[in-house]
Length: 335
Image (cartoon, rainbow, N blue to C red; front, side, top):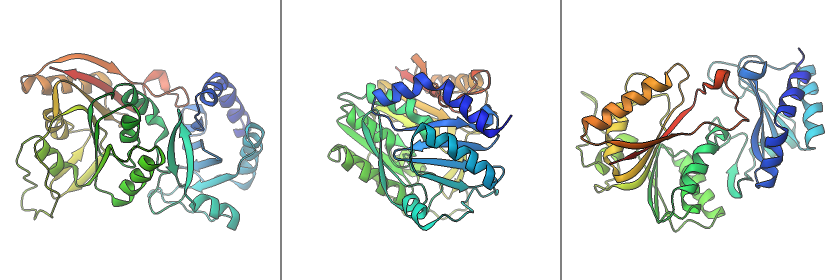
């Protein structure tokens, strides 16, 4: 089946979703999720006033890009940026025309449920500054932050933190190691007039979490610890934990397959009695129920109880095989 046919089918399936998005001031979403919809590694998204086509496995031919562009322009007459990221390091390979290069490298503003977010389709990092499949997480946090304190770990560009502040949080602490990501987070807070509620802590997550949990910082054996910001022991009403698949530093190793508990234990210690911790795991091969069961056991080992939980599944612009989403998000209330 041709790419044109597959894309047209995907857009038709999203008819109601796209109308709902327009009605709810949302102009950033996925229109083609290639792994599930017929072309592995091809993703097509709208980011505000621009279409973004990205290939992760195989470079699109000129004809394929022309065919895709024809369908997208029928949907909305917007500039189309193509990022070929088909090599193993996922870096953008292709050059653009001067006009499109200017569009791709400029800071632009888009909306999700009326919240303004900064985006840039090409920059010093790799992704366009907001993960669209995390929309359900931002919606949950916005709806459950009124008069609460919120800790946003691995905050990236602080989309979760911005949503919490919009939702009425009294304090939002965003923690991320990247100064570049936090700088965008500050822009997002300013765009929505919530800068007075948001804090931005540039830190490795391990020392930040351990200090907030009242634990010693420690580190990996024989590793000299770099400096880190000092934080007082603190508990929050809502904690959001969204770590990367794997990362290594002098302070510890993030490993979502083999050691989620290494982060989860101190994170739950920063969660107040009666508070909520939202946990994310984006590794497809991690079984949802087995992962959840391991979280519950960890809570119980700390002498606490999961009194309620809610699964947050990505919206229909991110379809999955048999409803088994690679991105697993669960909100747990703890006593």
